[in-house]
Image 1 (cartoon, rainbow, N blue to C red):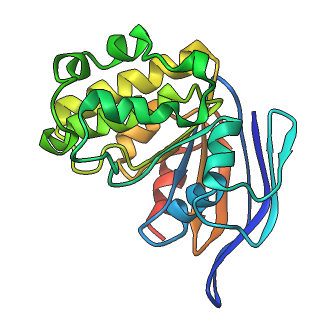
Image 2 (cartoon, rainbow, N blue to C red):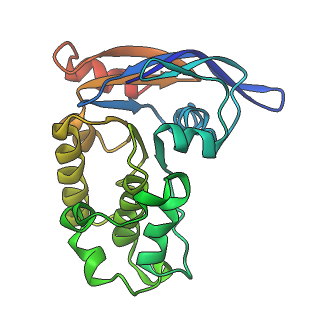
Amino acid sequence: MLDVKDLTLKYGQSQILHGISLTAKAGEVTCVMGTNGVGKTSLLRAISGRHPYAQGTLTLNGQPLNHPSAFEAARAGIAYVPQGREVFPLMTVTENLESGFACLPGSGHKIPDRIYDLFPVLKDMKDRRGGDLSGGQQQQLAIARALITQPKVLLLDEPTEGIQPNIIKQIGDVIEALRDEGDMAIILVEQYFDFAVRLADSFLVINRGEVILDGTRQDMDREVLLQKLAL
């Protein structure tokens, strides 16, 4: 579904990503791991058009994306759930969800029942302002808003950060359900090791902006993975 080849990214004169490549397949979760500050979020920002990359290529479903803006990436089918959630605090839950309509044709301007099946709490709180929700509820809202755009690729940046355990379990169940439907590729940036191992079909470990480990779940040794994450 998504091929990233030799991606480099800079902030000013500082190079953050050094030739990152990955392939994310429909019906699978690709987990990007590494310690803080190694370039994980920068990678997602580059893929989603949030920050321009310097070199490399993005190919979505066989079609090249030439340095897309955030809107162009979303229109092409890339949905990004950022670290920190970024819900609109003064807008209601319904209005937050409807903001996902921006990159859809008019015929798609309807909140599918599927959203409320995945996140029942959002139906119960649809008239409540986003800023009045708990952190876990905001995370569910952020994911649901991304799904409104009908993505081919879903980018999730630290969805468990600051979330209570019962909500983490619910979010994990949703990711599994989306993966098993087989319609989208999911790229998950996550530091919660057990959560990542539960969901991932393949792993990409980054250190100092470079890939130091890449492999499928079947080929990955747990102890080797932990050792690389400790670097």
